[in-house]
Length: 260
Image (cartoon, rainbow, N blue to C red; front, side, top):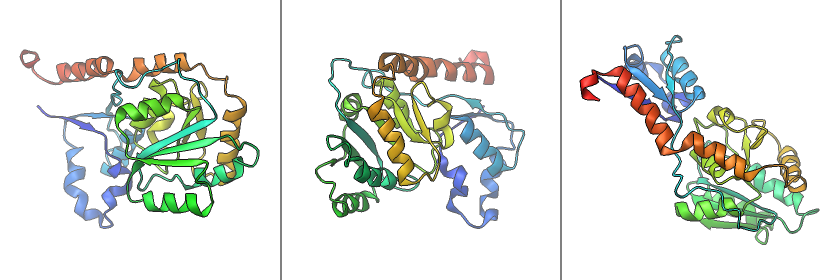
């Protein structure tokens, strides 16, 4: 027996292939009687549209977050500091956030944005920081280890994630496990676990002013969120034992019991 577990955003973009007939064999997979797991409802819908099998009903099981690294550290004193990290390539779009900081420092000269990660957009990110003369306010740290990412999340007032699409976004789940509220684009699977209790969803394609207003809201309402409760809820949803049990049940129901 075969079980498919799918995490890929490629379905949303038709694998970047313009000629649809090249994808027939991939589409055919989903017309077979094979159990399918996806990390989000959004990805399930992408695969339905991609395959043309609109009756497809995948089982939704989220990604895993390492609960031994991503946890809430209440001993940390937090300033007006925000954090972004990622593999900087499309569909990530950090540029409106950087431009919003240019406006925010007028009234909040003590705010800081820490950026970690790497990728094709790195040069453009650094160039924009320099062009806007934000080098005293935005620190591009480059590649970070997971432990360093968790530490920055705990220091941050909020984690910021600007993207044009995500099937899930593990990094947003990791931030929540640290108890860090998430300010994110309202796209894909992110909206399935980020809500008013743990963050704010920004409309896709929002302009710089909207990002500015949302970040300013966090600055002026820093005590609105219960970080311990955010962490507890996220760690319950994304820990390895919880996700592992869900996978076990799918396997158990899909194969001969003697194999389980």
